[in-house]
Length: 211
Image 1 (cartoon, one colour):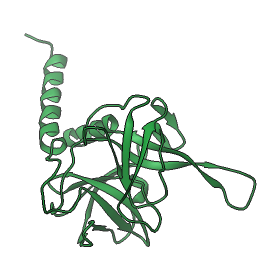
Image 2 (cartoon, one colour):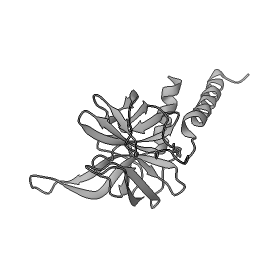
Image 3 (cartoon, one colour):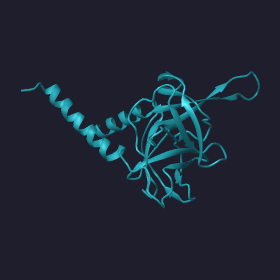
């Protein structure tokens, strides 16, 4: 007989595989539906998110607030429910009505030099895109336990939005922008931002499913 540890690991592996099929794999596009990138309205501010199927929305934990609603790129607003938020990784999972397209998570860590397409709602703009590259290896930095630096225009309001790889799958969740303190009254934003790799998002979802 196999030791109990190996039997348990086999069960865990099977459950994680099932989770991947249910929550991670999703159609990339359905004609006539709004896009998978959404705007999260919360507490007088806003952030971004991405629909991964069945009404599940991934966003950033620091975007969460009171009276949250989700806005689609056709102008429609819906109620949204916070399922959980992990502050150490700055990731949150929410759920709403699945009336928009879905994008699939690519459960890996993007490599240095890989092209990215970041989407979100920076400041007063809605549903715009920024192009760039992964500019460094995964690291623990600032409030984030796992983050990848991006040479891309990640601006406030884009937090929680997706970064897509060349195949259209989500390779990361945008969470912040690097700020340079220049000695004046207001700091300056740099051209670098940070995303949580999709591998970390998938691991968090797996742990929650097994809890």
